[in-house]
Length: 95
Image (cartoon, rainbow, N blue to C red; front, side, top):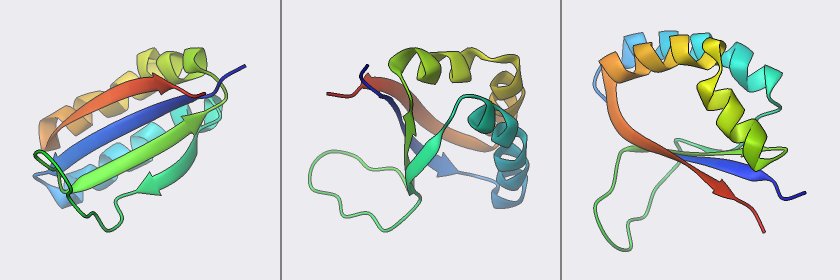
């Protein structure tokens, strides 16, 4: 079974409240087997527009990645993130 990956690109507007998002999202990530591969490290832009924070999260499957996002646990966190940051999240199936 192919793994699933979240790719998130985020510009944080309120770094203190973003910590609340991270704490609120943790239970969902633990429940769905998330493994962070990249989390806000150094970025070198090669093409196109960039965001300040870039995150890659590996899940056991594409369905687990989608289920994590749609879970009640993550949706609580998502509301916080949407208040304090701008960005995009997409799910990609691994090879």
